[in-house]
Every structure is written in structure tokens, then in C-alpha cells.
Image (cartoon, rainbow, N blue to C red; front, top):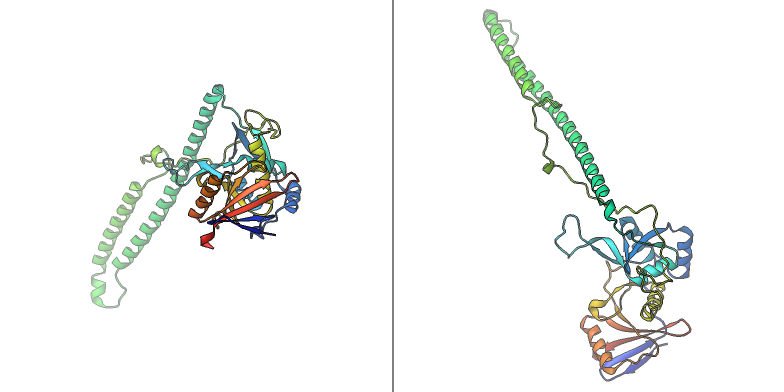
Length: 351
């Protein structure tokens, strides 16, 4: 049941529940959590200094398509490191996203390994060894491609010489003039045949031959490709991280602000919404009815504790902010019984 309140230029609607998102292809709520615990292959999220990172492309796709968790890419693209309009792996998860995935058993939180200066020389030697192996493999492929192309050229040369030889041969005839000129034509044919064979030998000697003694310079290293890894190797032994206990890597445990945001995040997530950070819009979360790649955000969610007073000036500024960006401001407040009360604010003149 909705109760409409008017504050002159603002209209507030207090809602006991929100309409669920339109994504029918993914089951949300308790049924999805149960499915996750049964059939989900455990993924690993590395946590360092409160930042949760996902390094695998397949894991990022699975989280987005199956669990409705999008996160935010923060890594530079290998081919475009000097721009930030498009970013790549790793994927940065909000603390609420990482905790939710850990609670439902979809991922395992581990402490990210700290770099050991003593292992730098070994890592550098391994990188150079892999790079040299890649150069050798590419050089072998280039030599094989050259040999294949050389054989194709030799076949074309042989075909051209055969056609030329047929044109030079005299046509068979019965006239006496043809018999008289037979010897002369035969001499010319022998001369042309010897010339053609000489050209064939010259072409064969000038064509590149495989091997180190063919006289063909190998490709420079600058012309070879450098392979870039698409996933970050994870150490075999990783220390699990308990999100219930506050630590250096997970400082969010027990903080009232985190508990407030998480209770609201999980409630909206269970209703089928996608959520992302809303720091640029003056809120806590941006609420999408579906995948952010297909939909614009409909709500700007602000989290308020039940007993916190909201100044009227902040209420008006928040309502104007939501209207200026064509979104509805959503005031979210959890209740002692575990339910969340939502109040939406919009300019009354726009209705």
C-alpha cells in the first residue's frame, strides 16, 4: 500500500515493497541461493586492504550472468594503457557484493598474496624464459609458412614454363615446307629448351630454402608478437579470509555503515535488481531494473538508519538531484524486524 505525501514541490511515496526487476531468465531470492549452493563452482575473490578483486574473465562473466553482480573494471587494457574510458580486468567488487557472494557460498574470499622481493628474480627469469619460448615457436611457424609459399611459387613457375614450351613447339603438318623447316625448328626448340632449363635452375637457386644456410635473414624480434596473459595465476596455497572478523584486508566487519548498506543491498538484490556504486550521483547505490549494459538506472538509493533524522534541506537537495539526472531518489531504511522501508521522492510538477 502506498501513501502519497506532498511537500508543496516534492512528492514522497512510502512503499512497503518495490516491484521486482524484469529479469525472468535468472531466478532470484531463496531459490537462486539454493541453486547456488548446490550447483555453483566455487570462485575465488582476492581481497587486499578492503578491496575485493576478481581476476578471471570467465568468473566475471559467470557472476554477471548467473548472479546479477556486475562490479566495476579497474584495470588498464593491454592495447590501450594510456586511457581510462574503457577498462579491463581485474573486476572490483563493492564490499557488499563480496560479502553477499561469500554468504551464499558462491565465492571464497582469500587474502591476496603479498609480493616477496626475494621472488622477483625468479619471476623475471620465468617471464624471460616464456618469452623466449614464444619467440622460438613463432620463428618456426614463420619458416614453415615461407617454405609453403616457396613451394607454391615453384609450382606456378613450372606451369608457366610448360605453357611456354608448348607454344614454342611447331604444329604437326604434312606440307613439304614444314618438313624442310623441321631441322631449323628443332634447333630453335633445343635452344629454347636449354634456355628454359637454365631459367628454371636460376629460379630454383634464387628461391629461399629453409634452414640456417639459406641466406635469408630471420625475422627481427620487433616483428614478432608478444603474448599477453588473459588471467592472473593464483597461488596454490591461499589463506582464506573470514568476512565476519575485522582484519587488515577486511576492515568492514562490524562497522554500522557497512551493516546498514549491506542489509539494503541484499534486500534489493533479492528482488531482482542490479546495483552499482552511486558516488557520482550523491547516493549509496544505483538501482537498475536489469543488466546495466541494457538499462539505465531508475533509482538512486540512499541508506538511512531508522533513528537518523533527515534535515529538510538535505531532503530537498536530494530530490532535486534525482530529478536533474532523470532518476527517482529512493530513501532506504531497514527495520528491526529485518524488512526494509523504501520512500521515493520526485518533483510533483513533473507528474
